[in-house]
Each structure stands twice: as structure tokens, then as C-alpha cells.
Length: 312
Image (cartoon, rainbow, N blue to C red; front, side, top):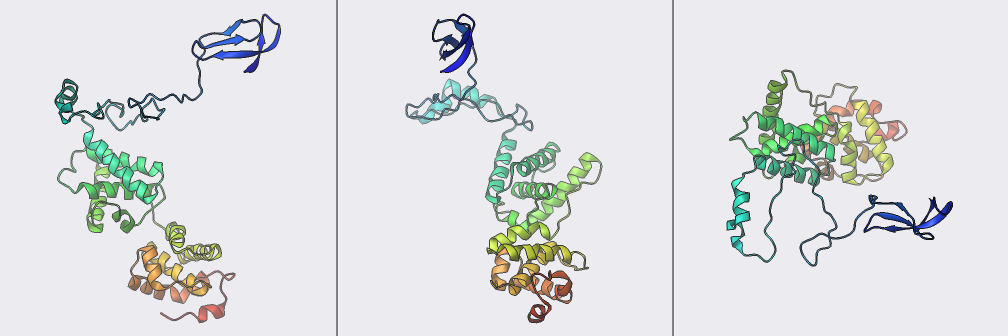
């Protein structure tokens, strides 16, 4: 019930909505104020075939521009309770006759989506990885290569391009058996193919140690003040010529900052949280040690605290 101006009553009156006919009727004089109106509210009626179904959805997924038919093709599923000879029936035969040209792409996109979900990546990274794989697949040059490594490398490149980099080890952990070496080779191959297609160099973004800090610190359960100090320290560390990988520098800074805090973390825990070997963290610590007074913020640690740190 709602108040609407009635032209017969010459005033606002309560109206009744007849959803079946799409009419809006004045409750006092019976005048149809609006007919065949479209109800834009949610529809909670179920259209499931099963008697116990309660899913009110009556539409499919969104269109996918990377697929030939936009991903809107119809697939006849096997009804519940039917025998195994369904696919030999007339409907099953007609479905099998028309092979889906995008079948391999659909399977690849599902694999990328699964890896993205396991890593907690946003949809924009997943979509970028799908686009990269589609470009490589269109060149028909990836046949015979390790597809798991190709898909993982597409996701790695997408993370770099979206400024949300992940380490190769993190990508490898969800890559269905592909090794770090295979993913590295696949990455170089994909970049080469993209350069051939575009006719110019492909920019995949620069990795900074600070890109990993918040995630690594979260894995260790560090306090907010300690995380803030680690982030400031890692940005200052980039001013010096530390010839180590950004991931190694991030791990070493985290280890140093935790040793200066009340909640000290053992080297083994830092290694597990960052995926960097203990020996690599020690070597990076050794390179950073001469510059600690300029790297560690004054509000977090004093000169005396720095001197009390164990020498590498």
C-alpha cells in the first residue's frame, strides 16, 4: 500500500498493486492508475526443476568477451534420477555433435580462477590473467608446453602488471604441480610471445620490497607499530645499493625489526612466513647491517638498541 494522486478522487489515496496484471488501482474509487507496469523488484519465486529446489535465480552468468559465444551457450545437463544412457538419447547426441570451440579456454579460465581464489586475489587480476592466456592461446604456439606452468605464469605476470605482485614460490604453491623453474621458463616464453604480438616491449612492473611487507607481516602476526617500522625501513633501504632481491630485503628487514621489538621472532618463523631461506636472510642481514642507523626509524629504536643487535 502506498499513497498516489488519483485523478478521479482529486487527492492522494492509497493504491493497491496487482502484481499478476501489472496494474496500480486506487483503493477508494477503483480507477486503474497505471497498467502493465514492470515490477523491477527482486523475484524470489523458484524456477528449479527439482521439487526441493530453492534457488530463485533464473539467469546465467555474465557474458565473457574472451569466448566466441560470450560464454552464453547452453549445455544440457543430465537430469537427476536418469539412467547413464542420457547422452545417447536425441538431446545428448545433438549436444555432442556441436563441439565447443572454447572448451580448452573455459577449462583454462577455471584453473586460473581456482588459483586466484586460493591466493585471495581480486577479480581484476584474474581477468588480466585470462586476457594474457587468451593472447598466447590465439598464437597457437603453446601446444606441447606445460599448461599448468603457462597458466601459473599468466597469473604471475597479471599480479605484476596490477601492482599486486606475488612471489614465484607463492604462485608455485597453487600451480597444480608446476615447479618454480617451469613457471620461470613459461614467464619468459609468454613475455616473448606478447612482444611479438604487440611489436614492442612488454612492461610487467617493477617489484619493490615494500610490496610484500604487509602480507609478510600479517603472516607473522606482528603488532601495528612494528609493521609501520618495517614499512618505513624497507623504503629507506632502497636508497642504498643492496644487491639482493626485493623479497630477500623484505625478509631481512622484518627479521631485524622484530629483533628490536618486544615480540621477537626466530629466524625460522620469518623464513616460513616469507618463503625465503634462512641462509639468504642472514646474507641480506649482513648487507643491511652497516646501514641500520639510517634505515631503522629513530622513533622505533635508539642507537643503543641497534648496537645491542647481534652482528652478522
